[in-house]
Length: 441
Image 1 (cartoon, one colour):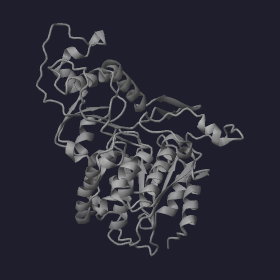
Image 2 (cartoon, rainbow, N blue to C red):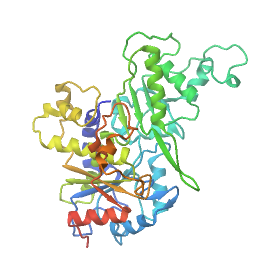
Image 3 (cartoon, helix red, strand yellow):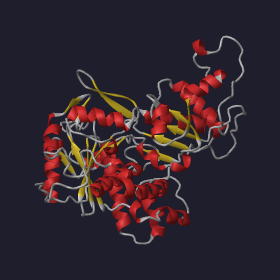
Image 4 (cartoon, rainbow, N blue to C red):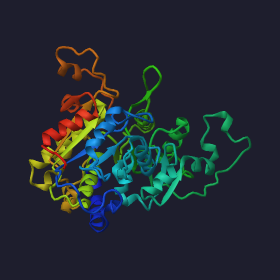
């Protein structure tokens, strides 16, 4: 995982296009002129589940909050993005769902799914990629810009003997590989699949054969194919009639994949990129979309502050604080050769490109963040339980908490300390407007 760095070159290209067409924010409820005289210099990053909605029902405070955020013309008075770790649908679908539930028109370019930053990884868009997950994975991949995509099911059909765990699915008669698929050049993991044993087996097969399933496994020390993973949540929370249930998430699937690969090869599985909260990639992409909105509305003030509102300490708060640390340390350094050190200090333990490569990636000012801070706000309407017993030394308590984050992210107690704890999202918006001295006309 290379933190923010692989995203920057893609951001450069997209930013140039944005100057011409404002990445889809043309017309519609955004318009081309800001009706309000108030000029925001901040943007809002909303988690969805537990902050704005529970299942398919709005949290009452959410509609109250949006009465302050949307004017009589249906325009947002500040730039807003909705950041979710869900990844089993298109952003257009999620935007339509949110618009219906909240009664506010939300554009697809305001929604960041766990896989949304993949739009920036253009160097893989023309390669043959294997995708894993559930939902319309082929459609999602093509919507993100991938042009040559195969699924686990397509792989099974071409190589029917490889899926051997379920005896009921084994071929009844001897068969030979069909082998009509191109060589896999990269693997993209969207989210937890339905049949884990099939997905684990075939992904390992692809990694050990270099993408050519007609060849034998190579377990000696060799670099494996590029692997890009979305959504690192170890567990996901489901609301049932009597409580919140924790269920295995995609992070658990990644733990299985990583350990199987290491057990077979003796080597660590390496990621080209990890995205979804709390990855810096996701927050960098969110900040970019915030700036695009401000540019389309012709707001002159640079967006210098971000506020991330969530209900989960280990994803929403950790991610916002991690990105804030990155922004603070970047601001303190003027030498671009320090970018690698910044990424390491921000909590990523993965490999960093050489200095010359870093300089090339950061060649466009528009690709660099304009924000200088990302403040975290924790609400009590989701998975966070404000009624839980808190020891006298809360700081020590957090240190003893089991870290559910991905192995490539360093645990630091300071990263799970929210800037504010509030009752609900309406209180969060009120605090932000007060701190920013913002009063839309």
